[in-house]
Image (tube, rainbow, N blue to C red; front, top):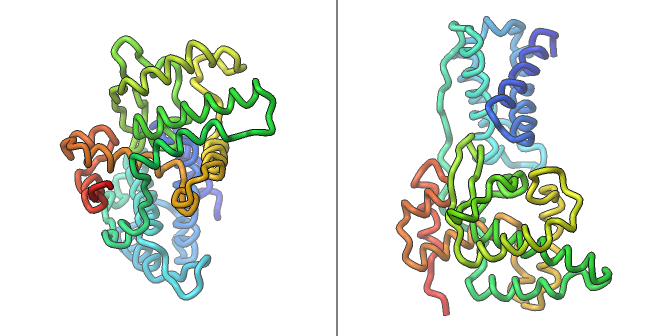
Amino acid sequence: MNHSFKEINKQYSAWLDTLGFSSGVVYDYNARVRDFLEWMELQSVNQINALNQKHINQYFNYLETRPNKRHKGRLLSVSHLNHNFIAVDKLLEFLHVQGLRSAPVPTNYRMRVDQDERIRKIETLTQSEIKTLFSAIENTYPKLDFIHREQKHYQLKLIFALYYGCGLRLSEGAKLRLSNIDFERKTVFVEKGKNYKDRIIPMSEGVYNALQDYVYNFRGTLKLPHNRLFLNSKNELNRMFKKLQNACEDEQIQQKRLSMHVLRHSIATHLLQNGMNIENIRLFLGHSSLETTQIYTHLVEPEV
């Protein structure tokens, strides 16, 4: 990639960072825009001021017909395509912020996801399975000494409080600070969540008690940076949750494809089952579109 495009890619990443996007999103968008700029060079377009709407349309058409490198015989998934479209749209927005008025305006073009396929991919736990999985915390890390085992158990309980009780996304919980927890108002403040949006989540009594227990009775035993709620990385959180699944003796839970995000899917489904208004669930989860939240209506079945 030529020096001019490399510099644009670098400045684009720095701009995303100033907007508050997570490091993972910045890295992902940067890589997708780099692919776009390299494609531009293959079209003999070597200066950004030569970019026009025709190039954008051609690139989007190219992506829709490009073979999937991981799965031979398939095309890129709709989700993958949409992430590319969003990254390029953010590049166009960046160019306009930088004063390049000749740049095309963001297209806001997205492909519709097959709802039936999306529903099939969503894994959830029933309310009774949540209780069973929570009870299995005591079975985890049996080879550790008492103190270190207790530390892991406290952290797993915190995972349930934040990711199930508050419906957080993985990155939202991982970057929480003590200042985001308001025990007086019983709320959790999610700062710069997905799409750079803030939201305030009310704590249930169970979440309130779990967070108080963690903050006042346990957090001080950890050597944490100032104001960090906990230090676990996203990968470590996923590993801990997988250990919990393996420690659970319930056969149905063992067979499910569990990840941290399953807790978020589960609380959304349970709130709907318990009669919460779909708009309130949307606000609770931080969805931009009600259509995204409505997918849970297809998952709700009476529990036995």
